[in-house]
Length: 361
Image (cartoon, rainbow, N blue to C red; front, side):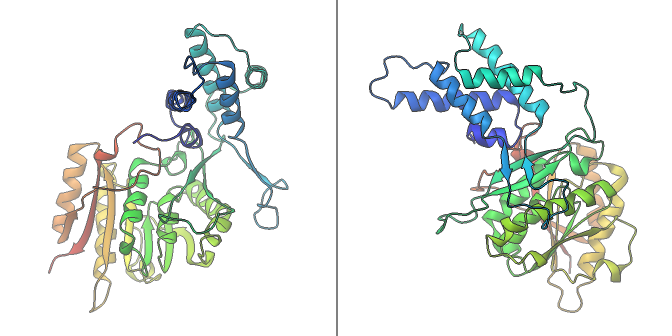
């Protein structure tokens, strides 16, 4: 699936993805113009449009003010990483030279000059954060223009806590699965394990969940998760979602009492990219078992997992532990799922396995 250059830029995709998409867009645009004798995607006009693309990455939203969110300024500026944009500009000018072209557009030259002179540290800083932005087509035909059309996710790309570092492939895949199969969560109370930056939980909410409680266990992840909920309140409200249905809280697998874990009276347990190390498998499966077995006499609870297949032994251990707990795993087809989130750069979406889990009779 090909995304637009803007979608790639907003998702902090590998920089050549952004440039290649832009060049293809320029070729398509120029080929549709009848009076163009030569298609030159590196011309001064195209350079100007690339400058406009880069300028669009600055997303100043004054409506997110101090009264709504605890921030240290009047508004929040949602920006991609400065290091990322600096590398993107350097790569674009390198490829421009490789094409035998000169930097001619004044606006683009100003941007290049700005990032050339900026004192941006080359060392990764765990405290550096930036924002990913996604335009989510929740229905086939939107009847009104959305004022808050972008879902915004704060990440810390260089942090050693995996829960804040990125949107993981399986999380994006599970979100896309819910968009294709909203009945999995519609009208149901959802609890999420290993929610990370919150993308999947937000999609579960707008697909009609009665409530969504996102859980994780590290301080950094929970603080960032709560922040992401706050900055997307208006995005949720714009889609008719009561923001009170979305919450976040602490849950460490294996360290809980059944009554505490079930206090939110959830119907569905969701999780993505939580099968990644053998040390966590037993506690993870035990948590799933407690959830599935605590539904009372009329137990229609189920779990919905998306797992990126990375290590065969880890995945095999996960399946064996499920079998020990009498948990049946039913793998789901990913046919005709929408492509919404440009996240599959390290592993393709085909490496993600989606399954529902229920207790055997």
